[in-house]
Amino acid sequence: MANIIDGKLVSAKVKQEVAEQTAKLKEQGIVPGLAVIIVGDDPASRVYVNNKKKACEAVGFYSEEYAMPAATTMEQLLEVIDTLNERKDINGILCQLPLPSHLDEKAVIDRIDTSKDVDAFSPVNVGKIMIGDYDFLPCTPAGVMELLKHYDIDVCGKNCVVIGRSNIVGKPMGMLLLHQNGTVTICHSRTKNLAEICRTADILVAAVGRANFVTADMVKDGAVVIDVGMNRVDGKLCGDVAYDEVEKKASFITPVPGGVGPMTIGMLMKNTLKAAKLHNNIED
Ligand code: NAP
Image (cartoon, rainbow, N blue to C red; front, side, top):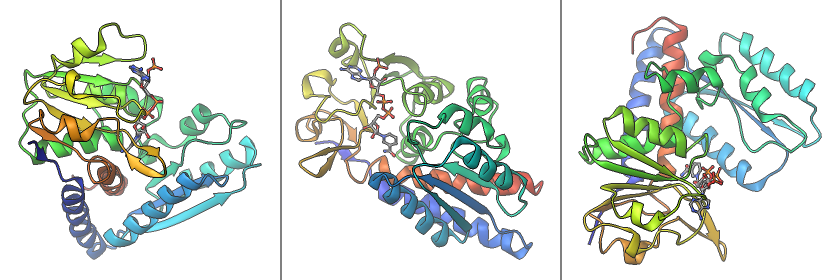
């Protein structure tokens, strides 16, 4: 039976630390501010945005929401971003993805001032992560690293296999494990012998988006299994890992829900706090 990695607990700890540091900043008259832009009425995006607002309130941030109609033009969206870029009371800006298909996501992300890009999706921030000299880390992979740290799971010298190579999860995940001296393999839909590669993993991260994709035969005895996936099966949230069978082989495992998911917002709060410190020349 695997040890269960409790993302709710670790996320609460991260948010508690952010709240304590925010209280200290407030004594100096500084209130971190986060602006969240949502375009259209995607129900999942609405839930994420509401959760982000609640988290801001809980840690003591100022937050603003820009709910824009699905028919919003690039010009209108970029105008909102330009205004937020100029505002001194806004330290973090995020645009909830996905955007309606007529909008150019890359151009939108690129327009956000890099010092306010608390999702760390812009090419400049991605490049900084690549060279290991960064201010912000993308929230989901950073959340995974925080979980590993909390449970004293040492990455150094371990075989780390990441399934998935998206720009927001798989690729940065691989890079962060590499920064911690893991030996990293990133797999994708064209990978040959996927199960065989997965069985070499001391740390296996699944970021595929397919329920029950990782089965027990793909997991080495004693491996640490991190499930980033968020899938709906018959209305029920589940990850990419066939949890019931894999937890019998793993040494540590993240459940879904309650594993990686809660970490993402915690790390967003951490990034926004960091942005507020940077904007006010306060050392982290
Ligand atoms: P994505 O952009 O769809 O990427 C999925 C990746 O999985 C791609 O690289 C794809 O390979 C790979 N893949 C698909 N089928 C495969 C197969 N049969 N064998 C091997 N690889 C395969 O998804 P994402 O944005 O990275 O998200 C992945 C999952 O994490 C989703 O369930 C998402 O909901 C979840 N997620 C969770 C959080 C959180 O807070 N917990 C945050 C973000 C995302 P190719 O590149 O070759 O197509």
